Length: 164
Image (cartoon, rainbow, N blue to C red; front, side, top):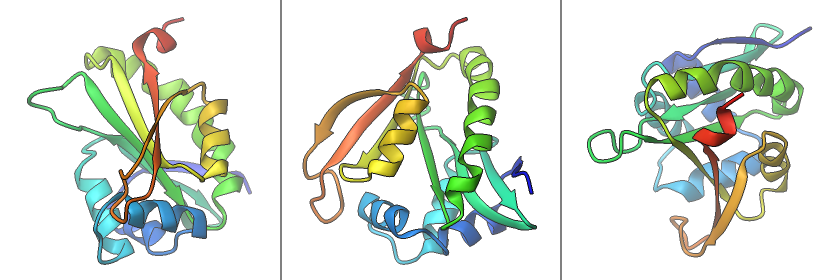
């Protein structure tokens, strides 16, 4: 069955965040001091109003992804992308990639966004290969960025990347 992309709702994003694949669980829980997957899902949903989606396979959400507002008062031109999934994420990745490439650039430009940042734990090779395939720029290592001192990698998409 082909993955279906749906607008993100709190229940579905929390379901995905409560059933993360091991690589994503490690990254999500290193990103912030969190008590549960449900809390991670709720934060992702609430920080991305109108900018979150889920990927579904066989009647179940298997991935959640979106673009958070960051600091809308002082830096409305900068956003923060996020994605995580269950053990079935890989099957949905091509559909998520197509959706992002086809839908995000024009909307981001229309909203005055010039940069979207992504932070990923340094050894999450699966995520890094996917980000490279999405033409994200690997910018730098961020030592001690994680809640437990983990090193993260900063990636970005820039407005010039979105122009035809």
